[in-house]
Length: 152
Length: 81
Image (tube, rainbow over all chains, first blue to last red; front, side, top):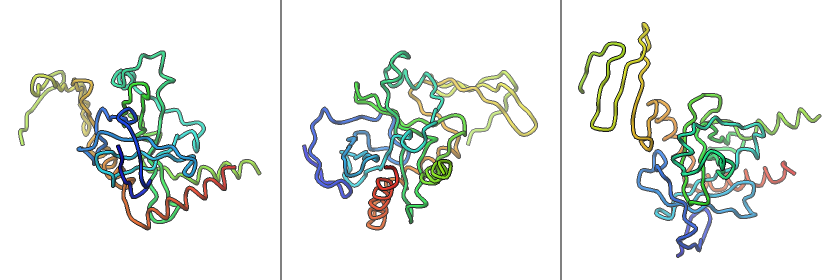
């Protein structure tokens, strides 16, 4: 199968590449099937491309790339929904959506609502953390600057 | 809109699968327990709105946005090494 995405260009994929959302993303009730596109050109960012609407593509990142201490408290019911036993929790990968509004300095990452992916079962879900330790619009780059200052 | 009065400990049933119960009432705050199927999403309304808005912003497609993303990726590649 093939699709043309305004962000990623031409994408060839097969049925087995598709990751299905257990619950659609809020704001996109009709979209369930996505491809996780991981290319060197965008590393450390990845793309979450809808197969149902090629125009919809999210920029995502593994939060640990920018927030080494990111440790969300994920309710065990979410693991159940993702069809994973407690002892295999490590097999779930976590990604967060990145928003780049007008300038790169104002880029934010949604640490409050991470996307959990069970690659084994090809299913995923965006969850909302109960605690407000992490914010929906967390500045992406200020964290890095702090790190740099700390190293001086 | 249906409006019901309930005391602490009393319950409301919505359809077959959903039950609400009032666990605690203060002057300006009420704690509500919710029993619902585990795959039924439940959100605080303001969080629901904020998340919807953030998701839409994250997917927004425009040339400006595309260029900003490219700049961001380049910036991060340069500064993360």
